[in-house]
Length: 228
Ligand code: CA
Image (cartoon, rainbow, N blue to C red):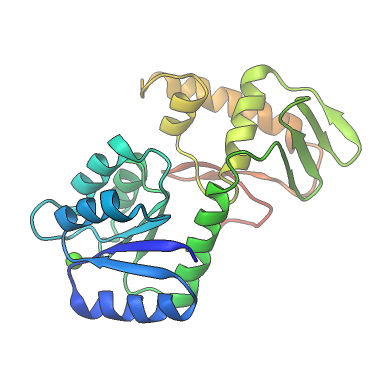
């Protein structure tokens, strides 16, 4: 049973989350403040965290930064009434894996938590597929249908990163960190865009179904579903 930690100061919200998540077989723990949440993290090692932003004491974004120092890969979903695009971007840049706005639809929350958990168990996967696109991490073979596609090492690494975060936006900052191995240097943004453009040309140009999506203000995403 996946273990989930809810960091949320509003008792009513926390209670309904606990009830609903237990029903779909999560092992749920609740912390009413960020500090309490950090203690729970050490003691109970949850598989996934749901984090509110407006918390008493240190707010959710500060808690997220502290959490990331010790739990680099722990999936975190921010659940907040703050719906400004800045808050979303800041949340994702500080290392949240997903972001949902209150009020929210419970089934959607459960679906997103499951995706995050699946992704986490994906870290050792060595081959990926989406629609007719496939990549093999060992042989570095990339194909659409039966047609082989030749990528540069950087292009391949970007594509692998997008696959490991399937259907989730990947920020330029994350690409800079994971592919170029540098903390964000803004001038790199243009370089990243050029690489993504070339990758897109090879992966998508000749095909009706476009797989590399640009998510305005957030970054890029690999998906076969049309974005708004
Ligand atoms: Ca709150």
